[in-house]
Image 1 (cartoon, rainbow, N blue to C red):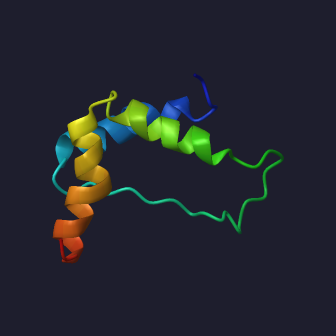
Image 2: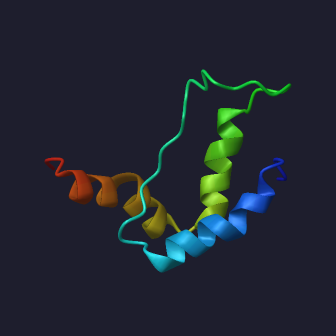
Length: 76
């Protein structure tokens, strides 16, 4: 699915490849500063994350759960 943000994919993949143990996920929701014509669809943004990790569920879990917990000292 093309979202209009496909040009970001190679950059995100390069960051993830360079430091997969330090990558975490975040957004600017609720997009209070958005001034473009079409508000981004949050589902498209999440879909991009899946494309960044090439649907690798282990890497996705690391980015969404493991890395933030370790890097920010969250308790299990």
